[in-house]
Length: 275
Ligand code: G1P
Image 1 (cartoon, rainbow, N blue to C red):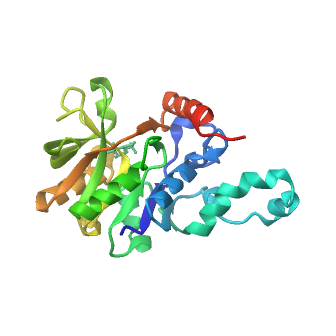
Image 2 (image 1 turned 90 degrees about the vertical axis):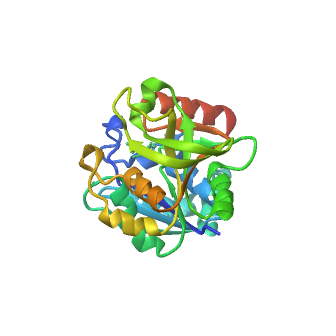
């Protein structure tokens, strides 16, 4: 069973400046719930109870969000407003939160390596909170991936087909089909130059990683953009053994972009929000 989920949350969120000047991008709300809470919900649904969050400077509000606010709770205690805290209280009862700082932004791979302290020697999930994943017809994406892990026991990346003019924004895999929705990864490239992508299968922000990834990350040299890329470490892992790519069931919204964020907000308002 996968018990822990890591949330790299140290990035700046520059696309949303000035909103993200002092507010973490992971705390941007979709209507009334911060992005990171959607990710935590998904991890809890998948049976995980240890949430490890890699933060940077100015990210205290993430810690505060998953803790008590005694003054507020006292003020609204016994009023109808108290119901609004029901979901977050359930989360606090179901999960433990631990935090570690990434002092310098050196890439997603580096952030995951920093998270080793919180994970230890066990397989774990990674959620990038700015990818919102929703499956209204069944299990959430992490739950789907955790079930696959039980079967295959190797690292798994979630992939989605994206249009050619957008593929350069993602890590992209090349794979051999194992099942109609599963590929064995043969190659992987981080943000390929336009026209050079090995396929239209983009990695989105859900991963299951086996703990040998940490040793590989220790030795992974900075790649695209001068940053340590998880994509490069996963390619090494694929060469040594096996990495799978899974075409998940459900919808993904790129909340790291303004149009994706607006689309997700409308979706949440119309389908998930309860007043
Ligand atoms: C990161 C990963 C990339 C992946 C993407 C998914 O990139 O490096 O491989 O496709 O997340 O959202 P970022 O969006 O942080 O630049």
